[in-house]
Structure formats: structure tokens, C-alpha cells
Amino acid sequence: MKNFIKYLKLFPTMLFPYYCIVMALLPFDISFELIVFLILTFTVVISVLTVKTDDSAKSVAKQNLIVKAVQIPAYIFYFIFGIMGFLTGIWGIMLLSVAIVTDLITIILTGIFAIGCNIKIYKQGVISKKTAVITSILSFVYCADLVVAIMLFLKSKVHKTLS
Image (cartoon, rainbow, N blue to C red):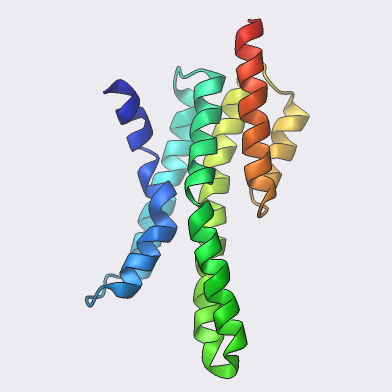
């Protein structure tokens, strides 16, 4: 139960791109801007709290990896959605715009969360300050963010066994 609660805090950040898909299918309108603002605020708070928790570097790196990995299908969906919008010409501009904006917001959310994880991993001595800065920047780059999350998880896993 304790582990479930630890990962429950990740749900808004992880599920944001899927929320956008559901919103497109529902007949009622909830302010998209309000939801983005609330989830962004929540993500910033969780990122700050991640630095202050007593979780191990391995646990924090695992959380970061889970957040990134859960969103892979959504990125694929929005990529295909964007291609469809691009191929339909002038009528697809809206589809393409939605795909781009949703992807950008998603990468910003996961990048902000990753900053907190990287600081925590740095504070536990797994990575250097320079590596923490570089990995934080790369957490805002498509595809590189997942590679960085995997690298940090593996590095923290090895560090845990050496301690």
C-alpha cells in the first residue's frame, strides 16, 4: 500500500496526454487551460517534494523512468495524429497544432518532474553536479529524456549495490 501511495502522486503527470485524448472524445467542455495550469502546478510541487523526500536515488530514478515510459504510447498516438494533420493539408492544421501543443506540454511536465529527480539523485552522490545539469536539460528533449531516465535508473541501481 505504501508503494502505491508513493506512485499515486505521479498519476496526473503520467496521464496528462491520455487526459487530452479523453477530453477530445467527451461531449462536455472543461477548460483545457485550467487543467494544464493545475497539472503544471501539481508537477512543480511534486518535483520540489521529490527533493525533500527520504526516498532512495533508485526509487526516485524508478519513478522518473515510469513517468517517461508510461507516456510512450501517447507520444506515438500524437505523432500519428500530427502526421494525419500534416497530410490533410490546410484542413489538418488544427490536428497538427493539437498534437504539437499536447506533446510540448507533456515534455515540459515530465521535464519539470525530472529536475526534482535529478537533484535528489545528485544529493545522494550518484551523479555529479555537471551530470545533473546536463540530464535535467536533456529531460526536455524528445527521446533523449527516456534515454536519460534509463541511464539514471541503471546508475542509481548500481550505486545502491555499491553503498
